[in-house]
Image (cartoon, rainbow, N blue to C red; front, side, top):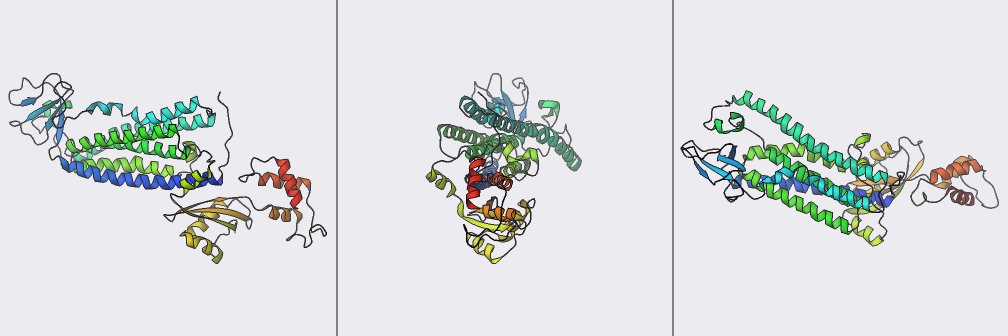
Length: 448
């Protein structure tokens, strides 16, 4: 049965795990994009002859020859062919797909809207059948599904239809292209010659649908399930299968149907409009926009109960953990901060700026405990806690220091109401949020 739950503040361990996954996501996205660039460059030069799609039956045409027979799934013509030497290639299930540009699996492009959503649908189904089917989880999965659908709609409407129309207009203006100047115009859809430049939309489609979305789902899975499980293994295997399918289709698409420049422009469009924004989303770069926060699309990390598993996960990228106490809004380069952050390779100015921005709503000069996690790539993340109980008690009593002889001399007094208010603040800290207020109040009275 669905149970509504309230959002909980992430623990320090969960925040550290999230920071590790963000670091890994950056490395993964950059590596995949570099591999895509090299792969597209190689495949674009692999086969020098490019093909254009044509329509109709050609058996009755005496001036051309046709490879294959029967009804064709698609017909192709070499872009540099003349009317006297043209060979039309028929791709169908009868004569096979062994003749370039035909290849087995050409119809897989038709599943471009279903395959990217398959891992999320499986993940959603497993969650609904398990004990964790809460409304917040369902909402996050639904938002992520809508995000993926929105990305694919963006690719179809904006990058394919809209950008394609703009590109065609620009090519006509710059190059003065004539739609009917080629000999095979009558054999083309729309009775028009191909444009002098036409970026590879299939490269855009493959990178957006089969690479970018699965990469984000891989990141989400790593965050939501930090330890190994059967579900995680199955989903990762399937995402690797989708990646292999993308590689297979991209290999033939870049080889046979577009020039190197057209393939590269398609790759740049996919990276600029989809891959880069998704990478920034994994880093919560849009956190200032409420509906684009990472927490809207990815569940918080599950608690890692096994300490050895936690250490194994974090050791991948974590260089060290530093604990500091800094006055709210007053962080500045100083020997104390420099000695703590210097050995970790953390930029002191960046930390001071980030800390002051985060503690801006806090009353100035309030001592704020900080737990900073430094990573091997010189980046960092940090969490803040509430001030020490002793500071609250001294502020409530109106004194600057405690009694020199505890139990004998009284330095000040604190009301039960003040104890209660302090307890409510302290309950926000990790490892304290599960303790009831009465117990926290008793602990504060005992230390007063």
